Image 1 (spheres, rainbow, N blue to C red):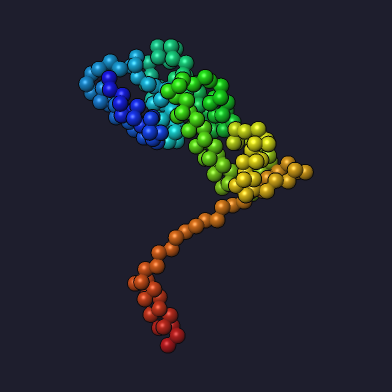
Image 2 (spheres, rainbow, N blue to C red):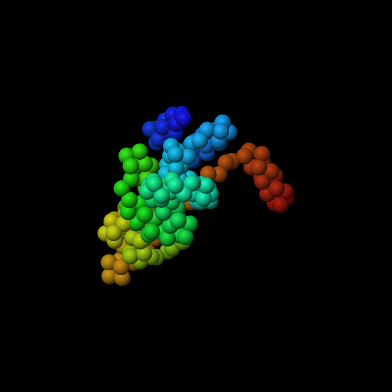
Length: 197
């Protein structure tokens, strides 16, 4: 079985392409009638779906994995453990699941990239949902200890109040690029001119 597209994507760190590549390869070998279950990189496939925030596809993939694979490949179970935590919105549990397993050399870069991306997603969630939040809750959402979480958000402009142990969220300015259409400007000018005269 030729996994070179997957290997190339992993080497190039194109982690957002992994799920699609695995899906296509799986369809291809299934159409050829080749027995692929024993050598299929299920953990990488699951992690690829989780990386692109596609918990539904990860869940359906998990259900299709033969139970013998689930019993004999602990890394597949560990990858699904992350998926379960995402599914139940157990934000701190995602980090526990990531740190709670000794990932293979092949999966380690993908897991590290997912962890970093997930932290950024959680930061964006906090940014959009809160105006103030406790340091403890921030640390829980970001999967860090309280000092690291405080330093992380302070670097991004948040303010910390050590007395109340609260953080004040600094909303990022929304930058919208307005395109000036000469036709619209002309119509607006004509309209204003019409109103004045």
